Amino acid sequence: MGFRTNLVAFNSFIDGLCKLGQIEYAMQVFESMKVKDEFTYSSIVQGLCSAGRFHLAARLLLSCVRSGVRILRSDKKAVIRGLRFTGFGPQAKKVQSNIRLAKLLHY
Image 1 (cartoon, rainbow, N blue to C red):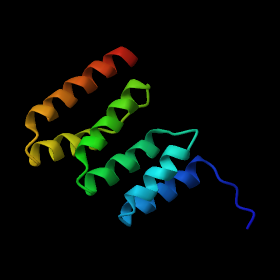
Image 2 (tube, rainbow, N blue to C red):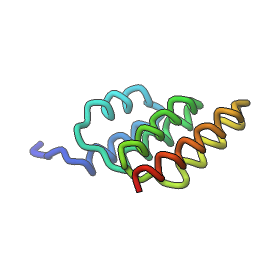
Image 3 (cartoon, rainbow, N blue to C red):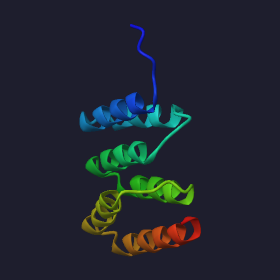
Image 4 (cartoon, rainbow, N blue to C red):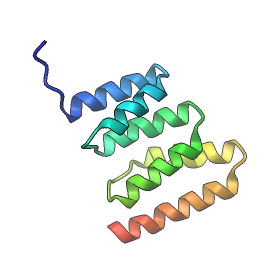
């Protein structure tokens, strides 16, 4: 159709897949992307949280911060609250402190 792919198109595609509950397919697209931004990470993190996959969302969020990409406060809250709600309070505290540390090292 002559449509060129770009970051905005990929971000929209991933966001739509996550909203449809197709998180595995969204993860495949995410992993195939060479360039990612804060919106790419945000869509995946929110999709993982909606699917109840808080541990994977936490790992992704930490890798995002460690690589110097800015994270949205709402993503951090979703992961922390999700971990606490599912009975992983100590892990939530550890993720929160790791995020703080990574931010200090990159900002």
